[in-house]
Every structure is written in C-alpha cells, then in structure tokens.
Length: 405
Ligand code: 3PG
Image (cartoon, rainbow, N blue to C red):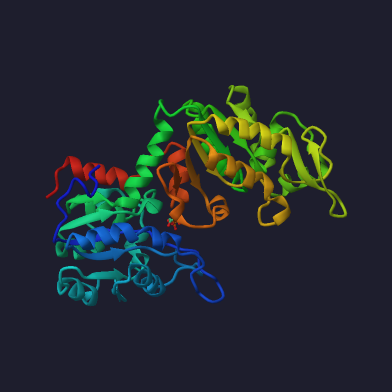
C-alpha cells in the first residue's frame, strides 16, 4: 500500500479521510477528548507544506446517538493545533461544498461536515459498489488524489473509506502508516517473545482476540486482568466466591466459560492472576489468593504484579488493551500502573490500545516514540488483533494494484 513517500502529492487538490470521531459530553455537546484531532496535525502539515490544498472528511457518532453532531467544534480545534485557518464547510457533497472545493487556492484547507449526514455512508458495501455512490461520484472529480489516514475507521467498508480509492490515486497518511507498521509487529516472528496484556470490561472482545492469538500461535504469553481474568479463573475451576459469581452472572459472562475452557485445554499460553486485591464488606481492602477469594475482585494482587512484570521485562513486543482493575477508583489503579510502568521501562516495543490504558498514560498521543505506539483505533484495533481484514486497507491495496491515475 503506497504511503505519502510513494506518491507525487505535491501541489495537488487532495481529499483526506481522517477519523476525528471523539467522545462528546451528552449534556453540553462539548468534545471530551481531542487526542484524535491532535494525531492528524503532522499529516496535515506535511501535505500543506508540499503545496497541496486539502479537504478533510470525517465522521462523528452514529445517527440516533447523542454524539452524532456536526464537526464545527472539531474545526475550531484543528485551527488551534494547526495555527492555520481551517475553513469549516457546513455541507458534505451539496452544491455549496462542491463550489467551495472548486474555488480553493493552493495551500488552503477545508473541513467538510460529518460524512454520516449522508445516508449512503452508513451502508457497508464492497468498494466497487461504493465507487458508484452519489457521495463518491459527486466529489471525486474535484480531486487529484485521495489520502486515507483514518485507521480507527478502517474496519468499516463505507463509501468515504473504500469508494474513493477505486477512482483516485491513493495513499495512506502518516497516522495510518504508523498504525500499520506498528501492528505488523504482531505477525513478525522476529519480534518475540510477544506478551499480550488483556484486561478491562469488554470480555467478549478480549475473548475473540485471545481465540485468534491462540489459534494462530501469535502470543508467547497472554496475561489476563479485569473481568477476562475472572472468566479464565472460573474456566480453570477456581472458586471466586458468591459475590463475584453474581457480578459475572449479571453481566451474562458465565455462558462464555466453556469458550475460555476450550482455550485453556488447547494449551493457550494464558496467565491467570494468582492473587487479587479485593474489597470486603465494610470497605476493607485485602489481597487474597485467587483460590480463596472472599471479597469483590477489584485489581490484581502484588504477587501477580511481580509474575506479570517478569514476563514483560523479557518481552520484545508488548500489546496492552484494557486495565487490570477498576482504575476509575484510585485505590485499584496499582496493578495497571505497575504493569504499564514495567512495559515502558522494558526493552520491548509497546503497543497500547483502548481508552482506559491510554488515559493512564496521561491521555496524549505524544507518547508515541520509536518504542511506544499508542493506537488511535478502538474497533479497528480489536478486529485487527482478532485476525480480521480491514476493508479500508484492502481498498487501498486494490487501488494500488489497479494503478489508478
Ligand atoms: C471508532 O471510534 O471506533 C471509529 O471512529 C469508528 O466508529 P464507528 O464504530 O461508529 O464506525
């Protein structure tokens, strides 16, 4: 797949798909996090410095949800971080937007409104079908090239992601390039041992990732925390006590125990905490071995932290997604903090995904360095790790093979 180094995007008019979909405060409508917006500044600057005029296109939320809003505030933030005037155009493909795009001068930059205001964008269809959509047909003749930098949306086969590469010369932007090259390490046999640290509350997601990692023998160790650790503890036959069982039952997780058991029986390299930090009735916090739990599990215990740290210390690649405990409560952050510190200190390459672990870093994408990669992807990262192909990347691949000019 071509990167910006492989294409002659100099002095061109370019359509640039980014993903600045951000969490929104349902009461005030304000954006709660701007890390995705910040992440695009290098790509935008580079394209402007090369004398291109660029039109940014992105989605925000889904119809019916409170975060399905216009991109007005996103434009203000882009302005602020770029130090350059980004014109917000309150239209996607109508006459107003097309006129604005036609009349752009070199070096100018426009942000179109939420592309999901166009209903076609919501359809998941193959690239050849989306190439015939109104959205694509109305916009593509106005451009000389297409850049897809929206890794976080690359698991969607939607028009703005897969249609344009069928008709325009295309490349990935710097965010996508970085994501893809960091994540390729997951499949690189030389980057071993590979240690995956999976926690948090999204148990089904984690289980799917683990199933894929085990099936394809991609992980040397899978360290579990949070609810996924409890699931594997149950699958191993440990008694987690009445209260934890009730919580797991309420979350509908007991039905997943046979799946976890199959993974264990197939010899999957799953590590289960040997102790937990629990909260007892009356609020007392103690550490208990995982075969003698009597309080509500809130974090991994200190012996587990030590064991996990020893695996992390020797790893060549560490992938972390989801916290070890209930990090919203200061008293139960230690497990996640310790594991993260160890991973940052180790010689290995660290990939961090998921809002919770990223927030423990201090919440910025600036941590990105030659040794740490903070992924912008939510669902896209999950599907990638679960072994599924990403349609937006496939479309770029087709585009490069068909040598679209
Ligand atoms: C995300 O936040 O994961 C992406 O922006 C994709 O959003 P979606 O799940 O609404 O397609």
